[in-house]
Length: 289
Image (cartoon, rainbow, N blue to C red):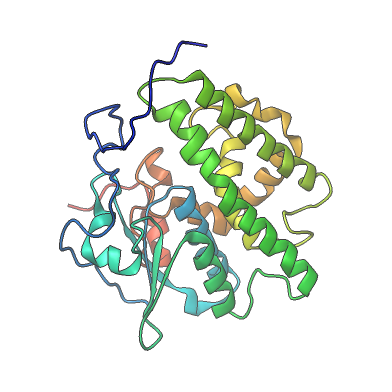
């Protein structure tokens, strides 16, 4: 291990130029808007402001699953929030999510309008709004579903902000940090693999919001779609996670949900904005002149 000569100061101060990385222009130690910027509003009661990262995919998968199940009231407009250019610090977005993180949902069917932020909270809100959709009716099974949902919310920061940051984005590769978070991510994969060895889906025999929350993170990791780390983490070892990942990934609503607010990768997999089911047919096609 390389020698570390850093000694923390008595009082931490924000040095914008030190250890710059691809997120330096949007990371800051204060909250609130940096610009006056209203959000667009579409034709549907549900307005989603997001980006096709794992946390955003959770919600678009849920909305597409609701539509697939026949809940026409789940029609929605999905607007792109470019976190790289600071859209999340616009006044309109901050009014929905004071934490300035995607995704954020505004339900305009209520009076007053209902704002919902944090991806897990949005999943729960939509499940309740549509009659308990994708949540077990039995109390004990529902508790299992909620437990795994909260597991994901508590675990993903170790995967994204921990392992992902130090392995993929940090300007300096720190052995201790990468080892620490790689160990924890592999432990989490083992937790899931042991669970899925005894259960078809995360919360039991039925597909639930727990699967929708976990799949965009750990399913993507299992398929080598996060941080180009598949070989490093030996994700092939987790055969039950891979089996579950494949099954969930074949669902039509999951395929659609993963496209929404996506602006990278294969053009055919990108749908920067979604306002109608017909928009999926236009994905990957050049705009008409």
